[in-house]
Amino acid sequence: MAQKTYLGIDLGGTKLLIGEVDEAGHILRRKYYPSGFLNQQEARALIFRSMDDYLATTAEAGCMPQAIGAGLLGRVDAEQGVWEQIDPRRTCHMPLSEELSARYGLPAFIDNDVKSATRAELRWGVGRFSRDFVYINVGTGIAAGIVIGGRLLRGSHCNAGEVGHTTIDLRVGTQCACGRHDCVETIAAGMGFDLCARLLQPQYPTSLAIPAEGRVAVQDVFRLCREGDPLCVRLVANAAEALSGLVMNLVRMSDPDTIVLGGSVVADGYLLSQMQPLLQDETIRFVTHGVQLTAMDARDAGLLGAACVAMDGNA
Figure 1: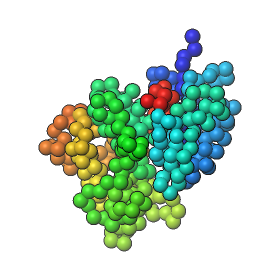
Figure 2: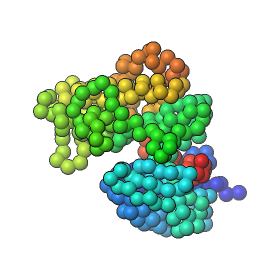
Figure 3: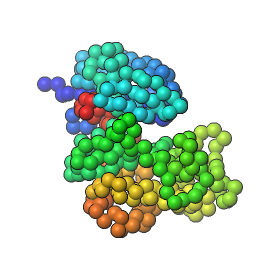
Figure 4: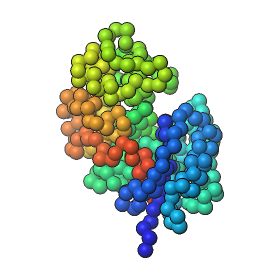
């Protein structure tokens, strides 16, 4: 009997990843497509074009997946299958589940990318022992999936978890696209390291390469911080303070027994090691499983999450 597989579509800020996943969470095959800054119509065209290519070149002949799941940037009404917006400046009420199903003849479901990764954490990660946890994705931006009593918090407008747009008592001087200053993601996310490096460079000597185009490489910041580079030491200290403050605020708000960190910025564990001394014992005393890195590979979390969307349907 052929194993059941699920087709996942992971749309991130720089790439689109399509692949097939089995019920145990094994990625059987995948293909990468560059994306970049897109509006929703452009993103839909990229998804369809890439899906057509994937099915023609990579999918196993004669094996039909059970369903399609997509994890998408921005605000998604998973229950209705509607992609509401990439961001407030790029809004389009798009019934993408229905469109995918009509085009490919399979049940299709969609969700926000970080909520999708949280579904994978719930199914294959800390959800095996915890029903109350917070998954914080620290990549290009920052967002969270908040699980309470085994249920993923969504909110009245499917916008719960946008915790990157919170502030703490740290005055760096960054301007966020949301209109506020010193949002956590403008300090501790990939885009935040770049923004802060450019903002603070005049104040600190540095060997960090700051490109005219593209972003500062976070791994270069970490390497130079270890070597004592003054700018990079400041950038990492600010990021650790911002992210640890965010963690403690979320602990006070939702009372989780586990905090899980995922995403490319925290994947090597260095930033977590800088955060740990800042986490106050009184605040995190009930976080019985601690603050830990996800066991999922940062490169796979979005695809695994999209496959979970396909498995779960519009839950």
